[in-house]
Length: 328
Ligand SMILES: [Zn+2]
Image (cartoon, rainbow, N blue to C red; front, side):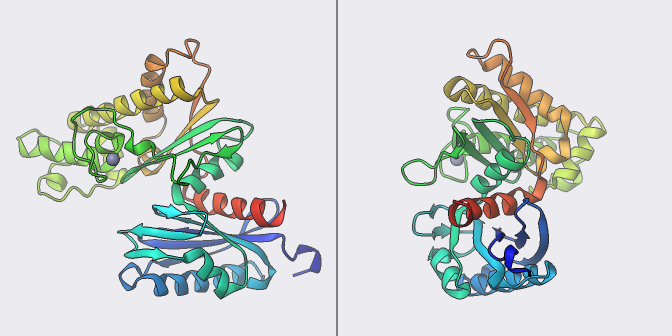
């Protein structure tokens, strides 16, 4: 690399339960190198660290650069985290506890590292480089297996006292509703995630209702891909349609409540379910939110689809690293 470019490149890492994606990003926020590996979740912390280092080397190589050309590394990780110390406190998906990934990766690479919640970095990516560009106050909600969120106030991600604020998926929208993975009942995630939709369709199928997803969901296995759900909706399957409308109804309630509480400029809706279901899904959520949003009678708050797809996480993580360590 030319000397002038040294330090201007940064890396973003998206650490997920199934895959690790590492990207090298240039000063214009373009991804110029990438590498992907399965997450060695069963093998624990050391194996995860080694795989991230390997992926970073490969991403640099595909960008025509070396690790030493990087100015910093940003990581998006499942949590809960202690973002100030760079520690993953606990993650069932990654099989780790009190994993000091930030300091460990910093020691392994000689580079400064920032560790933040995976959904928050994705939201920040959307805010700065995607659908949220040009706005000051944003709420992002990502609907997939679970539901994650991110709040940006006056340009800053709201982290709260513990660093873990933004869990829109665990706002309760149905008192006494279904049991959520977090232990509470009636969280948004428990009624509007893909898991929740699949569970409801499965229940209907076992009661004898006809659905194109019947064969898939008649057992206790509720694994459903967003694409399969979208295909069922596309074919006007009545059960799939009803459950998608129901999930959107609760998302609308939650987003309308967020408008009343926080008054964002824009709400961004993303995640696998949103990408598969497209505009009709956004319109359902938008209509529901508008009915609920008494503080916005003219419907000025924008409710739009996310724009960055799977790259939101690496882009947001890289940008946070740049802003903290390189360009400040
Ligand atoms: Zn919950």
